Image (spheres, rainbow, N blue to C red):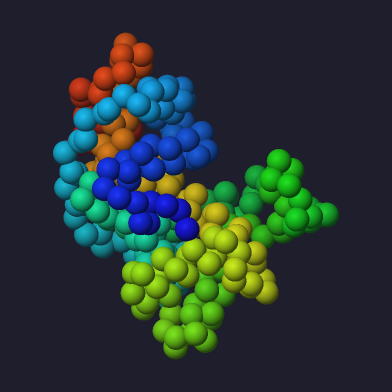
Length: 252
């Protein structure tokens, strides 16, 4: 699984910064700062960056899922808590509301593939540059994938995924990522890829979408958020001195 799971102190922030480049532009475009991802990553890696103060853990959410069932919901929460775990640098994906973000996304046209080309032929072993090749939409991938993982876990340990300890969850996620587990109805790698991508999105999105609560994701990587202009700082290779702000005006 991703090396942030067992990374030594000091590397988690680099993982999160690099992970930001893998999030579709549409997720961040709502800030009106479409150029900032590449620009913020442009500073030389060899130049030390001051570590930010550890963001406070957001308050527990009373959110109730509208797409996931109770069994699926505990899986999603357990999974995102291990994909970006909380550590000494701050809260993780669970605390940031990534699970809530994913549930909300499951009620959008994106989740049903409404804007995708979903006709055959479906060439599941096509190279990545050929684009998405499955006949499953995100809703179906989650529903089938979660069921498949929990079924496998029950056969192995008589406990579902969420009931496993953290180390076992990490091991299971690693097997799914590597394609070592075979599921009849959904490719394991496709399920893991979607789950990881959506978890990253939930950690870095504007809070208006349900994740990145109290801007913890942006604070950990020094992202300015939805500020009107910070171009003067792009080439200065210095930490941006003003706390991030969300679309709604929420501030760190």
